[in-house]
Image (cartoon, rainbow, N blue to C red; front, top):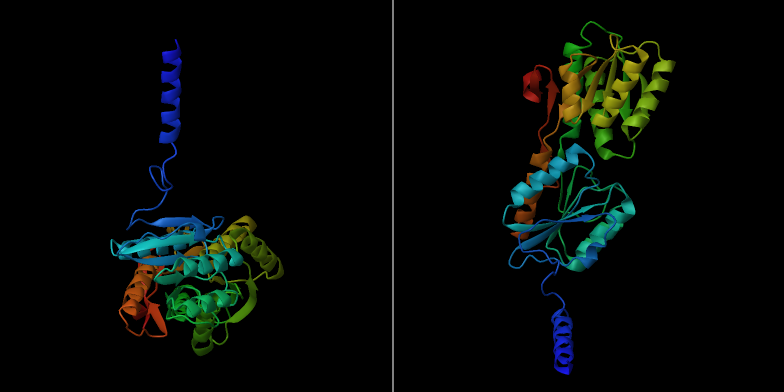
Amino acid sequence: MKKKVMLALTLAIALILGGCGPAGSAGDGGGTAGETTENSGNEDAASQETSGGDKKVIGVSLMTLQYEFFQDVKAGIEEAAGDEYEIVFNDPALDMQKQIDAVENFCSQGVDAIILNAVDGSGIVPALETAGEKGIPVVTVDMKPESGTFETYIGSDNFLGGELAAKWALKNLLQDKENAKVVFLTNPLSSAAIERIDGFKAVLAESAPNVEVVAEQGADTRETFMSTMEDILMANPEIDLVFSYSAQGGLGAYDAIQAAGREGEISVIGFDASAEEQDVIAEDGCYKGSIMQFPKELGKACVESVTKVLNGETLDAEIGVEVGIYTKDGIIYAADLQ
């Protein structure tokens, strides 16, 4: 009996000691070189060590991965990175402080480069200064920082997008309306929004000076744009066209116009050509078109720019990616409207 008890104790001790191996043994959560790591905005990015081995590591923070556009930018980055880089993603979910923390954590991890789509062009400047002090190159995309050190800004040609929307509208929607009334839905905190609206205005000033801008209002989500558009509809019995800087604005306007029963008198042009926009454009109702960006191409251009910087090349201050306008008849490019 005593021998059986001693044997049982010996086995128990062996099992306990066997489960106390050194940290980082079986069950270690460290990533394998070449994998894509993703941090949510609620995780401490500094707690995740990069594991690129011989590969260069790129830290990426896009303002949100909630929207299709930024999911496509992410896909373009992953496709271009292939097996050459390890990519560490961060999603700050539109929280500026979380994005600042993420960039600082990338710096403390010692990533080789950072790709950044800023939540706010002004608020991100301190994080850019941190990266500059560490000597880590930053490539910015879709939201241009107001200042700070970065290698280049890569974006859809936003001014061209606004011009394209205006030229197409004048040719196809407002051709018989010399004194047409137009609404702009924008976001004063977004440099991209300002450039898009300015591009549209520039064409009006040159080609249709009698067109009247009856309202220019800002918002950020589909719901707030719908509410804003409802107020505009109440205040303006005559509206011919709504141009929105984003899909959220265009769809919010579409919701409000439908609810008011004014689909037959108002046309909408959005920006992004999201999947839902394409669906409503196909219905051939009031949603007539949307400026189509190519977000995967933006993502690819970011990785290509990182490669050039790491190879010692100097980049242009800004790199533009072409846009088109998505309509029920297909995609139309700037050259088609000359």
